[in-house]
Image 1: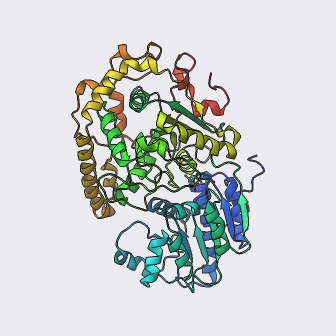
Image 2: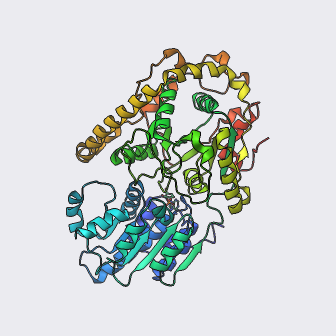
Image 3: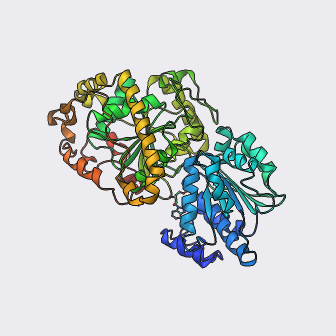
Length: 561
Ligand code: AMP
C-alpha cells in the first residue's frame, strides 16, 4: 500500500515546502493529502469528507501555500490571499501552527495570522493592516473585521477554506458564514473539509463550490478495530469513580489519556476526587481563558501531563439527565451550566483539536450524540497511531449507548463497542477509600475549586499574554495540573496498601508515589503512543479486560478472551 502512494516530491511542490515537510518527519502523504493536493494544485474546488486525524489540515494547507508562493513570483504585492474558517479558537491556533511549520523556510513570503483567539478587535487591527497572506479565524470574528474594514477580501482573495464545516453549523455560525460570503470576490478556489456530510454541508457546497471534486476517502469516520479498540463498561455512578481510581492509580491505563465528562462541575468533582489520591490531572473547559486552554493543550502535546479531564459541553450538561436526552445523529444540544457562568461559544475540545499521541479516551460520562462520540474518540488513534476508547455507562446512559452503537454500526461494521469484561468485585476493597474521598468532595468544595481555578487561570492567561511573549522559555514552568485543594485531603489515601490490590495484579502495578513525582517534572518524549495497558498484566491477569492494548491488538497478537 505504502509503495504505490504518490510522494510529496512528485507533486511539483516548492523546495521550501518539501524541506518543511521533511522536517516534520512526514515520510509520505496521508491518503487525503495524496488525493487532494494534486487536484487542488490543478485549481479544482474540493469537498472532502475527512475524519479528524487524517492529515486534512495539510491537505489544504500545502496547496494554499504552494499557490501563494507561485503567485508571489509574478505579483509581489502584499495582500490577504487565503482565508481559512474554523469553528473554534483551539483549531484556529492549531491551523496557524501547522501553516507556520509548513512555511518554516518561506516565512517571509507566506505570512499567517490567526485572529480567532483574542477578544479585542482593535488589538487585531494592526495585524490585519499588514495584510498577512493567510488569515485564519472563526466566521464571527472574520465578519466583525470585515464590517470594521480591518480586513478587505473582495479584490485579493484567491482561496477560501472552510474547515470542520459540519461543526461550523453545530456551533451556530451559519448566518455569519453566509453574510461573510458577500465580502468575497466572484472567483476564488474553495475547499470544504468536513467529518460528516450533513445536509447543512451539502447546502454549503452548493453555495461555495463550483464543480467540485468530492473526496469521500474514509469509509468510516473512525479508524477500524485494527487501529482503534472501542469498549464500554456498565457501571453505576459511584462505580465510575471507583473504576477510574483503579485504572489510574494502579496505572493500568497507560499513556496519555483524555477523560471526557459532560459538565464543568463534574470535571472539578473528578479532579478533586483524583487529587485525594495524589493523581494530578488538568481540567479543560469553556470557562477557562483561551490562552490557558491552548497552553494546556500545547503542554499536553509536549508530554507534561498524563491526564486531561475535558468537558464536552456541546454534548451533555447533566449526566443524570442522560436518559431523557436521546442520542441522535447530528442533533444539537445546548448546555446550560448551573450558576450561569460565562461560557465560550467557540470552545471545542472534543472537536477538531489535535491532541497528539493520545493513547486512551475515557468517556466518564457518555456523549449524547453519535457525532459527539466520534469527535471525542477521534482524539486517539490519529494518523497511524493505535488507540483505545473506553466508555463508562450508567443505567441512565444505556439508551444513548444503543443509539451510538446503531449509528456507528451503519458506518462501519466493526466499530461497535465491545463489552469491557472488568470484574468489579475484585476491586471492592477500594470502595471504602473511594467513598471516603467522595465525602470530602462536597458541592461547596467543587464550587470553590471551580472559582479558584478560573481566577488562577485568568492570572495565568494575563501572564501568558504579556510576560511569556517576551520570555517564552519560562512558559514551560507554568503548570495547569496543580492540586486545587478545597477538599480535605487525607494523606493516607495517597498510598495504596498492597492487601487491597487484587492478588493477580500485585506484581504488575506501581504503588509508590515516587515514580509519579519524578515523572511530573519532566515531559515525556514526543512521538510515541505508549501501549494503553501494562504488558506484564496480560496473560496472567484474571481481570482479562485489562488486555485491551491498542498496540498489541494491532499486531493481531492479543484479543479479548
Ligand atoms: P489533522 O487531521 O490535520 O488534524 O492531522 C492529524 C495529525 O497528523 C497531525 O498531528 C499532523 O501533524 C499529522 N500528519 C499530517 N500529515 C501527515 C503525514 N503526511 N505523515 C505523518 N503525519 C501527518
